[in-house]
Length: 232
Figure 1 (cartoon, rainbow, N blue to C red):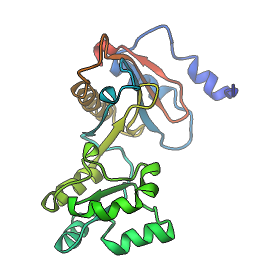
Figure 2: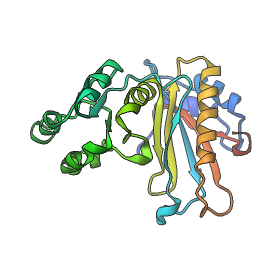
Figure 3: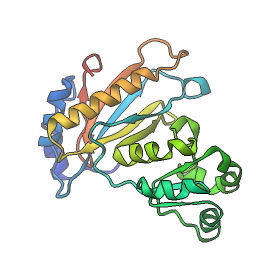
Figure 4: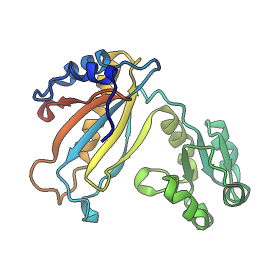
């Protein structure tokens, strides 16, 4: 087990791990326990009452955070015809068809964070799925990244404005960034509320018992603050 440094231990000592804090208390404590000299990301970690071994209990969806994540998102769009220029006009960093696919395939070009595609492009995009998939960049209807050409501008604006995809890991835990610590507390709370609403709405019908078993709020390199799930 890696040993924590003195700064982390001093910060962790401020958190009572036997107490469940309200969301507002947790946000204040996350700010107080941050000791890094950069603007850290605020993260939410949720342990869910699901069995990830069953496909119908896995969660993969998106949430539009009211105040975004504070991160600049580079968007690539697989499209053709007039949709290419429309995508660029809407804020896409890259847009195109065969030339982009060839660049990814032959040059290992991955200088983007989200890939969006129109349905008619998926036959071609599928050829580079072995490269996009492992990096989490393959367009997928569950993540809202396969859309008709007419919906491209709206989707691009949403992605750049703070739409976040989240999915549980193999242990049934969600890890989601909800902003930067420099955000005002009320903005972090509103982003937190939006995430929790989206998670509850995504509850699989096959999940039994308590759905949200634990909630932890933290910042990059900071200690986790346990939040009362019934108040989240």
